[in-house]
Length: 205
Ligand code: OGA
Ligand code: MN
Image (cartoon, rainbow, N blue to C red):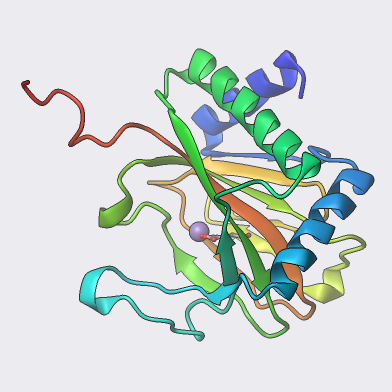
């Protein structure tokens, strides 16, 4: 992503609370990541995603129907390149918005047909470090009939088709959003640019 494109993302985040980058990845790059997802899936790495915090934490498929796999080690070149590009974007956002982003946590998500994720915010009391949410879609040839749009409750509300290579960024603590029920298996990588934990900063030595 060019410096100008990163500046446009920073501007959109500040003025509208979200940004959509249509061709963050090319189709061959998306295909390489899909192959990584399939390898991880074949190994049994994906688990149903839970919602709620503390004792309330549970899998509730009517609220959230995806299976996820947290990225700890990169699988190969494609994942390493993607993380390097997201890292460069983080540096640009820090330069433009003074957000103090320090790292990125991310997981792959697979929504089977019929699954969605009801309206929610990404910054839970347990995750106050999350500042900017990023979602990268890995679905080639997505059509309007496939459903599964990301609905962003901005002014005005906008629906984003989860087409391969599209990257969406939004403010984790203020932008409510939902995944409309999908009619086709829907793949994505979701991440959060995080700031330092408030508990870790400013504590007297
Ligand atoms: C999430 C989420 C949106 C999407 O994982 O918290 O809202 O479009 N994902 O997959
Ligand atoms: Mn979310």
